[in-house]
Image (cartoon, rainbow, N blue to C red; front, side):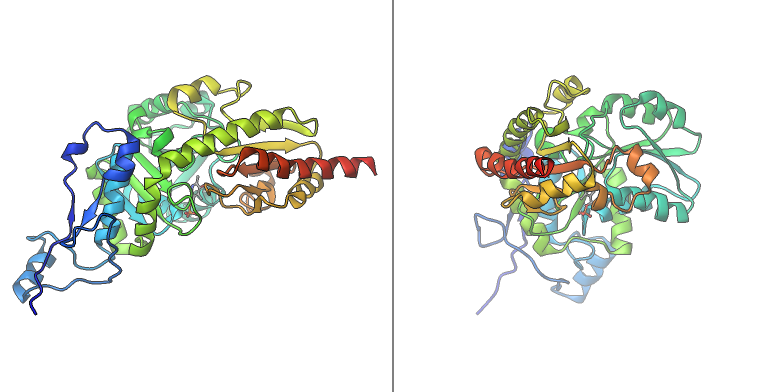
Length: 411
Ligand SMILES: *Cc1c(COP(=O)(O)O)cnc(C)c1O
């Protein structure tokens, strides 16, 4: 029996030029082998074999393109990379083992000792630790500023500033940054503008169109959307991504083929999931605003939100994360959480299942008291990552929380 070698191919993307994100989510980066399968094959292999010693030499020497070893490249990982790159409107994507690995790889590849970073104060707790504790050890200093205070950004710029890093909307308070203004500030000062687009995904916001140089994702969140895998990705111009790829190849926090396959398939339903998350979140935010036991609701889709207009301009939807303060402190917040029965008590977000967490003692628990108050992480703050269940059922479950608060205040 003879086996014919069939190269795996990524279907040419030229036909997809100008198509919408909804189409790119299912059609971009499609991988086909000689079997002409309709879904995408998965390549769980650590290394690749060659026809001859000469071919092996040509691959290693770079004269012939192709796979060598899955720390360098893997067809399944490349399929995921081309799909997310197309969706973000970037030249190239580099997949990583986690969202934190995406941020670390970007910093390691593009910063050096003596460089200065300006980062928004409300970023993901671990991102804060990465900059403050670990990047600092290698001579990269970070100044934290308010996401929305442009003057503070301006006065934080130093001659050695090389990177501005933000999340917009922020976690968990849904503050919205003016990306075009920050891109301008970065570029006027020879710095890169990096946006962690985890909360919006390219379905709701494409930071590269607003002047960002690099977009970062924790694929763990909405890109998968079903809580199965940990992963990350960096997207941007080929020139910068070649550097990030170079670091990854040498340091090793690459994405596994299995995880890449899950994320690749996850992207196909991302547009419809995001619409469902947004619809449910807006409805719940409005409902929460009316509850007597709620002190404040943070959601950019509410007219009461200070950056509502900016969010409407930059985003196609307001996302699935809603934060709110109950009257009281930690005791009331925990009582509320413990009274829910369906909603999952977990710090993960971006899942089809609704989750609830107490940021002050979980995701942001490692921050110092000053950093917590700077980021607005109060003891009575709760964060919902609104899933795609029927919104009435979510209200029923959240109502149990309000009843528990009421019962406690009556006794
Ligand atoms: C979760 C998260 C990260 C880190 O991603 P991991 O996949 O958990 O490493 C980074 N940024 C944001 C906004 C996140 O929510």
